[in-house]
Amino acid sequence: MHVYAAINHKYHRQTGVLMRVGFAGLGRMGQHMARNLARAGHTVTLWNRSSDKAHALAQELGCAVADTPKMLSQQSEIVVTMLADDPSSEAVHSGDHGLFAGSARSYIEMGTMSPDHIRGLIAHAPEGTLIIDAPVSGSTQAAADAQLLIMAGCTPEAAAPLAPILDAMGKQTLCLGGPGLGAVMKLSVNSLIHGLNQTLAEAMTLAEAAGIASEAAFDVIEASAACAPMLKYRRAIYLDESAHDVTFSVALARKDMEITANLARDLGTAMPQGRTTLEKLKEAEARGYAARDMAAILPFMRKEKP
Image (cartoon, rainbow, N blue to C red):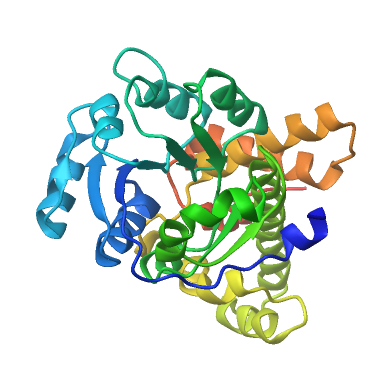
């Protein structure tokens, strides 16, 4: 199948195929994704580094908790991981108590990882094991509503047996043809998101400096050709970041852009805007914004001087 056809492949939703699924990584997105798997009827077992989160969600859903990643793998046909970064994923998959010490035959890594890490997982996985990188795009609300876009680093044929799992969490799965390409596409999408976040902060700061009220400025941006869906659903956070829960931290944004900049360097592609975005995220992180929502780049930029 041509790559173009794979990219444009969209699953038809399947019903009636239920599986034993392990889920590791119950952060802001992962909790919602695990809920949707359970609500779809799959037999779900949970594991999380902070076990209290796993037990609380298990009580809500009426499902099991595994004591270790190895035990999670032993109790599952398929394991889904939604982890923060390469080191977290490496720690969960490897070692005597890691996922690869168990017996699951398929693993879906849905966190934002580097393509090198995905290739490393494939290289060290037990023989006959399927590893697919399938990161997602969408807000925490999209995760709750099973409306995530899933970018799979495989062919449609390889992903087809996993469709009941993917369909329970997302609105659409796009297959990109080969291992690690889901990871590359997710980094590409996130570089656009983080660049837009930075540019919005600059545009808002400029308008405010001229005396335009923040809400009025956002009204115009939202009604303009420059508006993206992210700006609409994040409007309230941009206008009052401190009054809302963190959905995507500055530290995670910096991590994404660091991986992306390194990938661009390795591939020999220019990324001047991305490098500027990365530098601003680093500056914000160094000034105490690391744990705040990425929308905090707006108040950060208000304090910046030319």
